[in-house]
Amino acid sequence: SGAISKTINMPNEASIEDVEKAHMLSWKLMLKGTAVYRDGSKLSQPLNSVATESFKELQMEDDEVAATPVAPAMKAAEQVIKIIQHKRRALPHRRKGYTQKASIGGHKVYLRTGEYDDGSLGEIFIDMHKEGAAYRSLMNCFAIAISLGLQHGVPLEEFADAFVFTRFEPNGMVTGNKSISMSTSTIDYIFRELAITYLGR
Image (cartoon, rainbow, N blue to C red; front, side, top):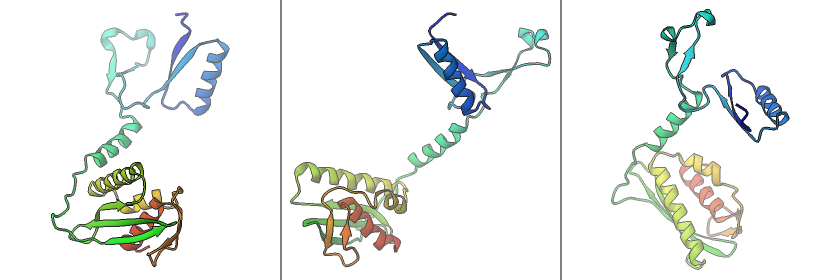
């Protein structure tokens, strides 16, 4: 059509090298922009036409239209949706837990937990009274987010693996907790403590 931008449609079996060659050809043709579409890569796509044995004999009334293929990305998306839609597990109105007071690099931190009847963790609260208002608010929002994740079925192991060794101040020597002597951040300390108490690490 003479346009300076093109959409490049590729079959499902197209390789990385094929995409690379397409971009190189586009550059040589001085196209301003290209959009590569690989069959089956989107969650949805137009119907595919299936060719008969002889293309010359193909008639409009004889066209066969295949159902929309299930893209590989759809399977992953369905799993994500299942996780998001996981029913929230409510905590009992009166619940057990514990409060752990400690000091990280000279900064006091209070960790409070709320448990289900089976003893599993369902919520956390983080208090750092002498820190700035913005930092306290951020830690409070972080604790709420973690609590919601736990109540929707995210395993504590996932959080611990993600946040242990997170590095920012305050950090350093930990006092008030016999199980932990050093910490790289408040978040690192919190999840080390939770992993020791609830995961037996």
